[in-house]
Amino acid sequence: MDVLFAPFQYEFFRNGTIAAVLVGGLCGLIGVYIVLRGMSFIGHGLSHAVFGGAVVAFILQFNFYVGAVSWGFIAALLINQTVRKTTISADAAIGVVTTASFALGVALISRYRRFSQSFDAALFGNVLGVTPTDIIVIIFVTLAAAFMIFFFYKQLLFTTFNTEVAQVYGIPTVWIETWFALILAAVIIAAVQIMGVTMIGAALVVPPITIRLLTDSFHRLMIYSTILGAVTGLIGMYLSFYMDVSSGASIVLLQAMLFCIALFYVAKIRNRGRLVETPVYGPT
Amino acid sequence: MDPLIELRGVAFGYGSFNVLDEIDLHLHPGQFVGLVGPSGAGKTSLLKLILTLLTPGEGEIQRVRPDLRITYVPQIETVDWSFPVTAEEVVLMGLDHRQNIWPWPRARERKRAREILERLEIGHLSERHIRDLSGGQQQRVFLARALVADPEVLVLDEPTTGVDVRSAENIFHWLTVLNREGMTILLTTHDLNMAAAHVPWVVCLNRRIVAQGPPQEIFTEEILSDAYKGNFIVLRQDDMIFVQQRPHPHGLKEVLPDPVEGGLPNHDNLEKAV
Image 1 (cartoon, each protein chain N blue to C red):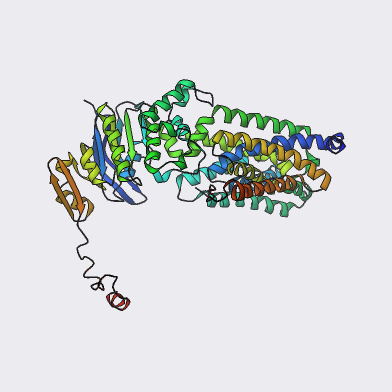
Image 2 (cartoon, rainbow over the protein chains, first blue to last red):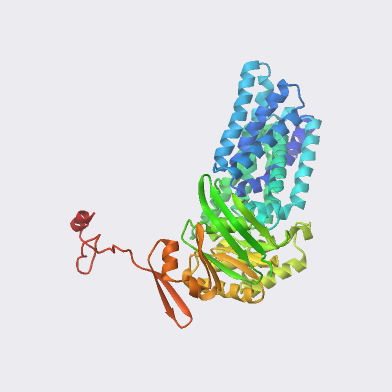
């Protein structure tokens, strides 16, 4: 039992674990919509875009959260509008908008060269850096995301299933997508400290695709993907503590391992003798 | 009686290319209208203009009331069949979401969805994933989603594409029943024979409205040849009309040499012909 409870004597582990469980669950929940819309790359891209925003906020001595969320929100809206109003596909729009934003961050860092240490933590995740303020922000974002998904569940479901048709049926799809972009930007900011910019994309995508292999039900997908994200957040923190590796990397590696087990189960055991029908998600 | 939807001088294009020009069209209450025309004639664009998914470049589109209830059955190939939803969940999407703010459906909403699925004879499939249904059953699920909203106007984009002849006949049968009950229906179709048999008013479109009227007047060799830029044979038997495109004017005979008896033309002859 000491193995389980000993790490909790450290404040950084307590804070980090609360953050990892909430962020893992949040990414698992939001990730369902991202994966089903064929925009799996958006989490990876937006986390990079937010990095650019964070650097700009730092240089202008602006509040980090306000700067980074605004930047991420604008990037998400730009991607949505580019896809809606042009023939450019989602993956190309994500590639252009977010990479340009990341490049801006890199350019500013190389120009000012005085804060590379803290931005290493932003890139790869740093459990030691989770403060009580970060936890309050994560709790606030979790509540906001849960509220939106609970009360706009049907609208989000229809918009994700077929945006154009949902509009005909009176769903305010532009508003729904705008709110979702705002929540997504906030989730990514909340997750940066624990997962790191480079790992958020996987945390958003791996739990939903793992559960998608095992169920054809939308509400079960949402529930189990959230649980998987939270549980891997918790176990990942222990692995990070005992194996002395980055928290983001340990969580993502654990999720990837579970995905491989689910894939093996579906391919070799559940569907033995049958054609394996795995869903294919690509850019829309 | 005022038309439910009226298009006056509507033009629409993508970039500099106009796919629709000078469209004047009235959709009256209780009408059952079929839009026919070749691929690229602007049928789907016209539907999307009526559904306000697109904005006309010129002209105007008026609805009799801003809150006119219109529902839409899209082309089957626009649907993501791997999306994790059951037939019943798809039907429930069609309900007015403002009536119930909770994420789960009320008992009476589920009852209504089940009743419509039963009516379309797919009630036993309500728990099935949409991927596991046949083409005809999938079409009926999307028709059920449109009907659960209790529409005044039902718009369908090629409802029989990708389904077998019997399923197509069933779909047109249901649409005829709904129309007789008073529902206004507008659809696009490539199936001229189904349109001739079931649709009482046909609009023949090729960027402009080539002709419109009852199928007996519209399905003539002249009008169809003009709209499709092809060569059509129209056969009439009692009240029935059969439309068939004539074989290619050059035929295969002039392109390929005579086949070897009982088989394909030999390779040398084929190469010479090419």
